[in-house]
Amino acid sequence: MKYFKSKISITLFASIILLTSCGPYLEFFNVEVKMPANLPVDFKEKSVSVFTAIPLTEQLNENTLSTAEDSVLMINFAKGMAASLEKHLALDAGAIPVFNHFESEISDIRERSFIESLSQSSESDVLVLLENLNVGKFEKLKTDKTPIRAGFATSYIYAPLSLLINIYDGSTGDLITSLTQNDTIYWEILSKEDVREERLMKGLFPALNKISVPAGEDIINNFFPDWVNEERCLYSYDDYSWRRAMSLAMDFKWTDAMSIWMAETTSQDKVKASCAAYNIAIACEMLEKYDLAIEWLDYAQKRYPITGLEELKSYLRNK
Image 1 (spheres, one colour):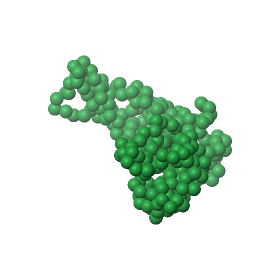
Image 2 (cartoon, rainbow, N blue to C red):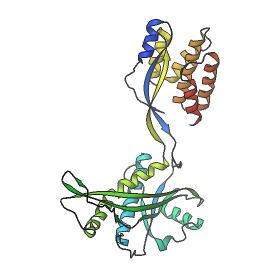
Image 3 (cartoon, helix red, strand yellow):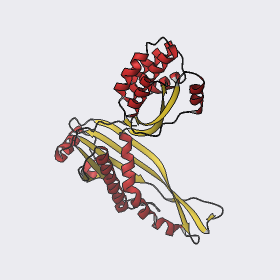
């Protein structure tokens, strides 16, 4: 679990308790909490390559991208995927190659032998294959009257988007995971006058092409854990040992802080023992020992039902 320091704040309620009794008070701090990947894949210490399946069939529908435009989008999207993988895996730029294949060349992509041959030719343990990236028909949102914003005529264009990414184990040919996404792309176009639909459509490919690389980078995030900022609190008392434990915790020395709190868990003061057990549970969470954290929360509950026990326990059970 990552950690970064922030200014410690004490709630007004806790301050009042401190002034009127010898009871505990709360100190709050921020942490970066690791959230699991939507589709976890173990890329660690493995060579990775990205492959595309470029379409060959020309689309004949009006207001759709040409095969050439589709191909450019797919290639740039794949480049973004490779760049994102390099960032997540702390690799140099260009370390993950992108191989572009035509549909006819990979019609048997789901055959194990073909996956194994791609793995051998690319010397890759994991193959990330962009099998489909399709942008459907562009349409203008119909309105009774052209909206005006800040003196400009406003038009809205939308198109359906679908993609399929399959990730394979190169050594076995097995499918590790698959991501299918269906979405709709919207554009807001401002112009000094109402523009004919045909003219609007002509400017959409450059706009799509501009975002294709960052879109490819973003989609790869589904396969990696994320870090989000969350607030946590610790109980403390106005004496040296508890202040020392708090100082160690703020320096991310959780094991050392736990040794101080551990001595307090057998205190005759039930509230103090419960607070110490709660703090140990927080330390266990920071060290990603979630089951042990829940055990300490159960112990804290038995000693004294202080605030925050059930909420933290419910959160940890969903980790």
